Amino acid sequence: MCKPTLLRVFWPIFLLGMTGCSITHAIRVGDGQRIGVGQMIAEVHNSPVIFVGERHDDASHHELQLEVIQSLQKAGKPLAIGVEMFQTDSQPALDAWIAGKTREEQFVRVYQANWRNLNWGLYRDVFLFARDHGIPMVALNAPNRIVEKVARQGFSALSNDELRALPAESADPISDENIRFMTAYYPGHGKNSEAFRHLGEAQMLRNRVMAKGIIRYLAQHPESRMVVLAGGAHAWGRGGIPAELGKLPYKVILPPFPGIDITDGADYLLD
Image 1 (tube, rainbow, N blue to C red):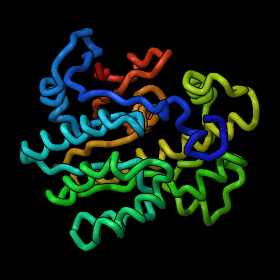
Image 2: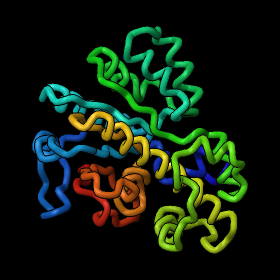
Image 3: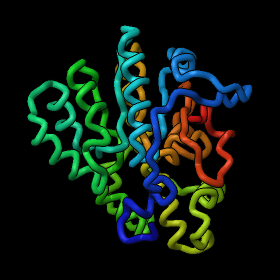
Image 4: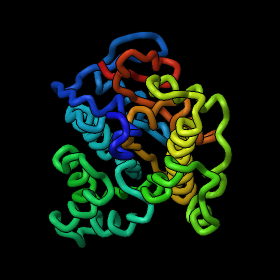
């Protein structure tokens, strides 16, 4: 989990190989009460943005994501699904999938090009449900080629063309607070090193691009809600995507982070 791939760089605490049974309860952070998943979904029902964080290879988290999506879809209000798993330049492929214009075997190749090393089967039911019910899926992630360059060399290495390919302010300097936030879940890295700052810039780039994508979609579809599927660190309200949403209201559902207190950045913790 050290650094052989960018995937492992960004997800060292979420690729733990954990498996679990179906999730039926959550802890409501506001009052510490243990409640059923159905009640949790009812409580987040009217939020414009609902983050359902995941450990990427935990099937039970994807089952919960599908349950949230299914429940909201049945309510009849327009719904979209924002996905970390696809880069923004793959939006046409997602649109074709939802429109039923792409066979599954073709779409799987696009998925694999975007989301390396994670089995399609983990996400298949979510993507099939979205296609079968015509629920728009929004590609949120920054292009890998740019993220990888920032992770190696920092924001200052980006060309004018690369900066133009990003939403405005995506490559603004990150604060010392951002760096302190990152040390919470990357404790093994030298937090004062230039390499660690580059890692922080790459992580923040992804958060900012994903937040801009959410804001843009909901501005164009103000009647809609968006369920955002993203890794726990990105969904965390303290320093993740939610912190970049400005005044846009949201709710955060997170799996537990081993060894880290995340109660200040979540509304519900999966039990």
